[in-house]
Length: 308
View 1 (cartoon, rainbow, N blue to C red):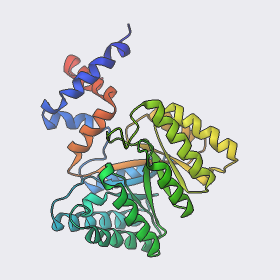
View 2: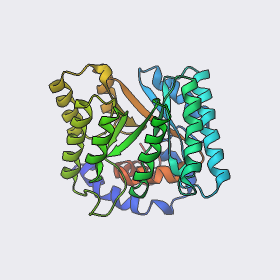
View 3: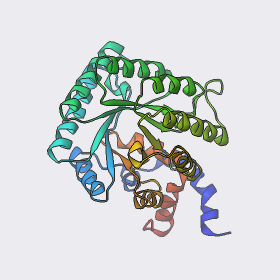
């Protein structure tokens, strides 16, 4: 058995106990997934990625705010990011979470916050992606997206999760709107009656939804780190005779740099998600749970003292 095979089960064990490590220790490994705590770090990293012919989406970490004041402050943070993207000529946009803008407080209040952000982006000829959160927010998220579109804001898009059983009907509606859609597997573990759990079922649904979006001529963000789905995407692109301007691949910061480099070398458009903010710990713990292999770095740091 090689060291990689030995590490796989250990990674899961380490992740299950990760919460006991001091934050300062965890932060060493969190930097794989986040730009830092401050916006200037995100802008700097965005510039580095741009220099490698990689576009970015910048995200201010945080969700599920409890007060109107927090929601308004979050909206202001996103507006500040848009100003800096324009000032520094970053090839990138932003993504927003509606629970960070007050969705769970009042939907109309949340819409007003989202509208202001999209208005600022439109002034810069820029774009806002509305992230999709857990299934309790799916309907409201799509309603706010459609309301923004109906209000004349075509500089916004949404996310669809292949894990959810409802996504096929949601995609049918979005195709009619010629929406800009980021298609991902989805990270939230939802009840079986509303979501797929089996890996192959999720993959099959992802491929079905991808074909629907590409055939429907939607601007599609192919968001995956799964080799099977990347191959399926290339097969669909070839089958439909699409041009490289018709789609883009999207990846998370710090995940599968080997795949990222191959996609860029192939001449395809690639966008990397660049999160930053003081809520880095919650975000990073979720990333570790999604990708337990990263825990191997922690294990080697404990055993060998250097994490290499």
